[in-house]
Length: 308
Ligand SMILES: [Zn+2]
View 1 (cartoon, protein in one colour):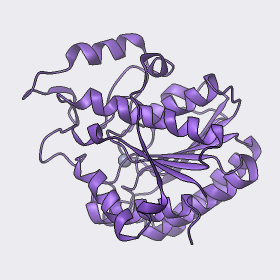
View 2 (cartoon, protein in one colour):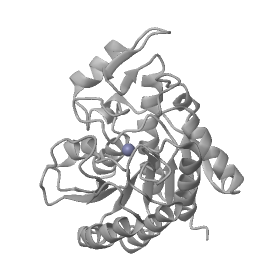
View 3 (cartoon, rainbow, N blue to C red):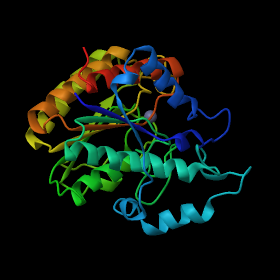
View 4 (cartoon, helix red, strand yellow):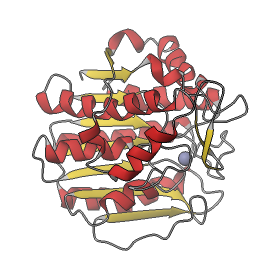
């Protein structure tokens, strides 16, 4: 498999304080593990471009985007958008590259230059709604990528699969009334973000109880995601790859293992082989304990690469 690794050094500059779990070290943890497992040289490396304003406006309100830029702080300052989410001096640069990574990933797999892509970027995106930042997220990276696939590449069916421990409320908010997008999300429930879950034919909510183990996660994916995706027949699969459901990660009460991330990625690659010529673009969401994040992301990327 030809697999892209898309990132940008500016993604390391966004810093919400030394005690904030969404830290620059997260990207180092992933890249360190890719080096240790000898996968790094096998990936094709790309610098993430900045997302263009028009690409952001496909999924975000212009007043929201303008407001973020208007409130960008001076060095040494930070602006609270919600109690977990702070606009710091380099936040917008990082967020523009994080969203642009998803756009480039889509372009690379749609052109056939690459088959799969992983966006090693931050800030994450899946909690960002059309009109608001929340939960460490500013622009909804995966949604920007999906909208680019629909509008620029003319696709009719894009599946977004989200295995972060938290519900991707932002992705749901943006696409709940767009039948061109199937959104499957597994998440601890009830739990953050605790926004109302919309009931739509294109939304699959796989609710996992606090304390759920691998078996419950795999059962939900097998019984809920796989039939829905097979019916939908996506032309492209996008993945919101959050690793905070890992049992070592105390950001959630879920108990997944490294091997679950390999397992779910194998199922995703089977779906991609069946429906969309292996085209998968995955982007980093959560994952806050460095060792577990590094190992889990590497396990995910290894399967995206088709390395056994
Ligand atoms: Zn999360």
